[in-house]
Image (cartoon, rainbow, N blue to C red; front, side, top):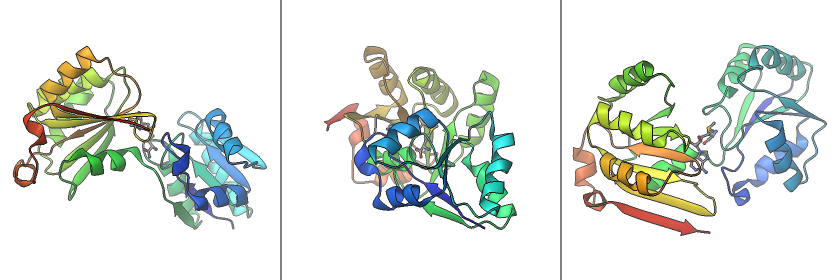
Length: 246
Ligand code: SAM
């Protein structure tokens, strides 16, 4: 039997590719990717030419998952990559991992870049306890019920969001949580990385004047304010915008 390697890829900056990720991708017999076109670009940059590049995404996972598992049982080593960052985070990778474990296949993580954790550590909000909530559902009623559950969560909350929906999502957060402190982490590791820190209302106003572009992680303070307030910082007293041009 082969192994299933979960290989992290950069979230924007190609320099975040690890040596081990490159070696693993070179050595594996098959690479399974969410978006093969995107992955092809990455592979060609690192001069990796897999014998088989397989598509594995939300809409074909039912058929393609068991097929990939069969390859591994036959002795092939398989690397799973996502569009960006860690596979199995906000993509169907976790289903493949579960299938692999069921079949006794070794699952080997090759860690690296991740948008949520990069946003969290630079947010200025408490990091001791946090909840990764991924993407919110699409329907208003589902959004409300998810947020109602998260409302009493103690630690910092992390959401993924697309630029088209970030303003709406902030409106939902305001409605569900009140005017908590929030950090919008945009285009992490990319040329125009940006952090906007303030209350939900302040950040929403900022976005009206500076229409959202690029990819966002929304970091929201948790239910208990004590921890954040005792922290050695007062950044939330006014809106702050930090831009990095790399
Ligand atoms: N697997 C990835 C990871 O480990 O971070 C996440 C994939 S998820 C499908 C894509 C979402 O991640 C985007 O909508 C955005 O919310 C977030 N994201 C990915 N890259 C980002 C970046 N460079 N800056 C900010 N957010 C990013």
